[in-house]
Image (cartoon, rainbow, N blue to C red; front, side, top):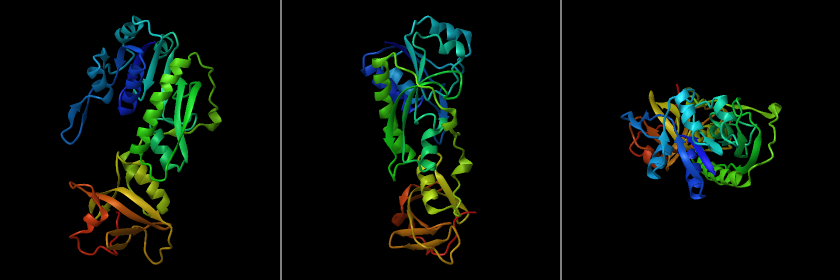
Length: 308
């Protein structure tokens, strides 16, 4: 097929590579403009841009798809379909109907659950036992279009957003190749009553509230790994927690956030229900360290209160 592709991060690049490897012609790749990233805030190309350049594809990075010249460029390509994956820009209605088979979106959830910007993080935060990928026929709403194909992925107890992202990216790549092979597919309307919204993650959400149960804080740490990183305060300075595990014990006489144990490589903290064993930590300006290395050289911190 003649496929216009629109996407930005690694999730999308995985799908683009699969489409190319399956033999589809991609006359145009759309991705967001380069953004500042990293400590030096240097302008960085997206994962999709890097792949497009490596495969010598025609690339465009418009700040918006509302520009008449962009619409005209797309209209001249006589595309069979447009595939969209984590693009990050709204697709105007006149563009949705332009390709012969419309615009298909690769969405990292089992729609209608977790419509919106952060479906992977929200699924982990909510304690969902499974998620998946939906291939959706795009309409003018936010992830409201009819569903064409789905595949389920189990969420393991130790999955982070990073590990689950990689599973979903591979699943999404396989599913969009299958969708184009089997087109046209019978559309299944979404049930709005079953929908929920996956709001964009904010840094404020990543501040650990030690009064929450240990199992919820563990999910939060995994959901915010790698970005923005769950964090607390130690000795008045930021401390990121990258890995932890909930301990179903009874904590008596210690307020939430109190370090219960800090010896023999074990760092355990009281929460609102049970305790949390911290496995990997990072002080401001430092490296990520296992608990044993983090504790080495520190005075005893048993009894210290983490948080504000």
